[in-house]
View 1 (cartoon, rainbow over the protein chains, first blue to last red):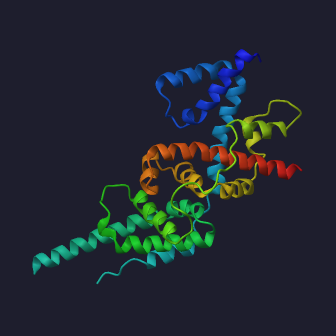
View 2: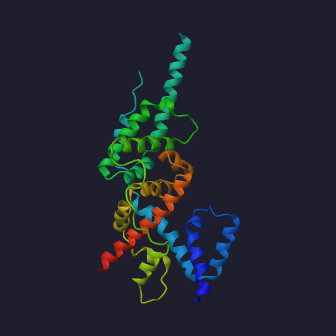
View 3: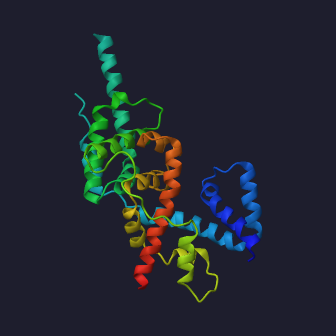
Length: 80
Length: 193
């Protein structure tokens, strides 16, 4: 990759989080996608970030202990 | 008298409806609480205190607004009141890497320079890696990651829950994700060495 080619990838990296959060302007989104269309190096890193977000969410999700649900229900204020 | 009875009956019905709606959200509230607080035990206690307070002050909830965010606002305030953390300003300047750092690190651990499938690269991380890396992210950054990326709250909701400007939510979220990735990359390095 030439030095000239390095800057677009650095710029694409800056846009990755806002792109995946859908908060880029239309012009920025088009710009990011135009770069991603031609740059597999960045495309891989965007795809990785998407997979990582899903994996993080799955990895940290713990079911609520069943006895906690019963304790919460018991906190309701009784009807007179 | 009859009017009083009607009013009391209506209020009782509204309260029961509120309680049922709040209880139906308990799984989601716990999922967020688990990582806002330090441990499973803390999270359970915090969720119970949150529901006790919510049931007592149900009249201050405006029906039709976001009940999940309302409950989380109570929960984060209780968490701060209990001195589990400071409310303002990050406690330290954490290490932060660029956004591609973790991928570069993980894919370099793979098969001799061959480009690896991105999902396979993610699978080099374990569930424990993620849980321990998330717990190592300083509170102020972790809170927004937990609310937005794990709890599915909007930036706006997260801003209201944490009582910070929306711009701060966005900057902490972006920095927090980089800190998390840096922590994950460090874990991988430790596993290898």
